Amino acid sequence: MIPLSGDIGNTKGVVRENVGSFGTTRGTSTLKRGFAHMLKNGVVMDVTTVEQAQIAEEAGAVAVMVLDKLPSDVRKAGGVARTASIRIIQEIMDSVTIPVMAKCRIGHVYEAMVLQETNVDMIDESEVLTPADENHHIWKWDFTTPFVNGARNLGEALRRIEEGAAMIRTKGEPGTGNVAEAVIHIKNVNTELRRIKSIYDAGDEQDLISVARELKVSYSILEETASLGRLPVVNFAAGGISTPADAAYLMTLGCDGVFVGSGIFKADDAKERAQAIVLATTFWEDPDKVKEAQKMIDERQSMLGLDTKNLDLRMQERGSTA
Amino acid sequence: MSGISIGVLAVQGDVAENIMATKMALEELGLEGIVSEVKTPEQISDIDGLIIPGGESTVIGTLSMVNGSLKKIKEKIASGMPVFGICAGMIMLSKKAKDRVLGEMDQPLLDFLDVKIERNAFGRQKDSFESVISIDKIGISKFPGVFIRAPSILETGKDVEILSKFNEKIIAVKQGNVLGTSFHPELTGDLSLHKYFVNLIKAKH
Image 1: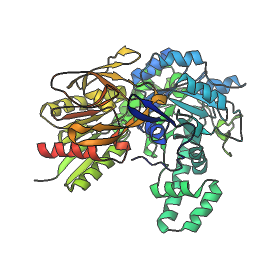
Image 2: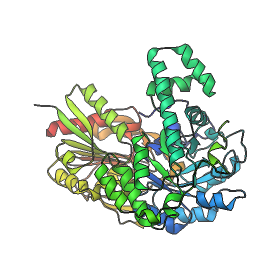
Image 3: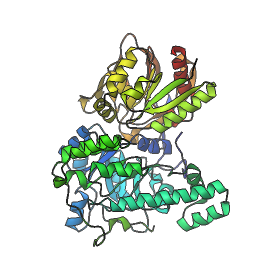
Image 4: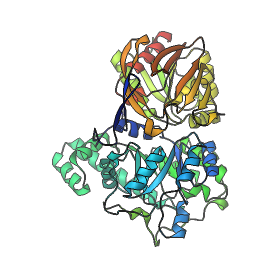
């Protein structure tokens, strides 16, 4: 049975109806979080066109994420980044059998409603787009479609889950081709999980309450997370993954799978690279297979990437204090 | 007689939930046995029963072909090993699968279960649903059905026994020692289907 920590039953997103002689329920946490569980050990790839989506599916992507521009192009273009064209999202939904996700702006309830009506399989409330409301994320319990949210630390992750996120991706710094930030954040989350687990194991409820206050989350979700010793929802790594070795490394840090943004379709060998990253994510425990995957790509064709130290725009910080 | 060894195909999908459900099923039945992740042909050759979990069937199929696991599973099914395919796993076991929107697909299948499957038969994720179903034929009168972008079965061959239907759509079948469901028992906490499968393995062992 999957953990349902922080679940709020009977919300607007839960729909009861009769199908023939059967009573059915849609939009429950089991269905939303269960969908994310089906993606585990997989690679979700950012795509902007039907052609890229088909390359992703053929390479073994577990889902595609539709954007108007790849994150590195968002970074270059500046201006306001919004949800992708609905017409392109629909064309992609009609051309691949794997799940199709799309991004909406942080806090932009109506972009999310539009994506739900479009029938995408999951909505990413994403810092890659320009936030519509820095102080409030979307109250995701009002939706039947599941959400994934980014987080840099345990507090952010649990706050997003309390708002109804069915899946978390630990943020990196998108569009940089640099995996460093993703590594820091997954390690942050792991360290904090170990800390609350040890407090839980010691039976120190008083200390656990003070951690809940520090992280600005409810005691009940913190206690359940501490007892599990991991996030109560599926957690993928994201941001800056460019090579098979990057993906395999993040899997060793305990991620359930990876999102790859610009790393594939900003490289000159996208097709081979997509396949290679899938192989490395599946067989990450076998260094020989990861080596074979790494051999499929040419480093001279990797995206150039950016040093994350002196960026003008740090997307990861968007909405993180809320 | 030594304990039975049950493998969960660990290429992609909800492997951990099936391992936990199977371990609990063994315990409730009071049987000796081990449950482990299997990924390589060597690991698969050592097991007495296999669960192919939910996930994306295109991904599980392609990747288990890459390392030779698909061929090994085929051999083991031919020799009578019980297999339980859940959602994507049932698609993998089938002879024929088509997508509700895209039609016929060219994807690697195990080509055993004599059924024609419709992928994403109930629609996309927003249409995923829970409903109480019954699997009376194997003595389970009420079961919590969790359907996530679920497939259904359009046609069945003569050796296939239909175990359950939801609103006229076939959602559970059995052919010899091979069991397939459209829904996800491993997400529910109800162990009756996993216990049924463990008993199939025990009878064969």
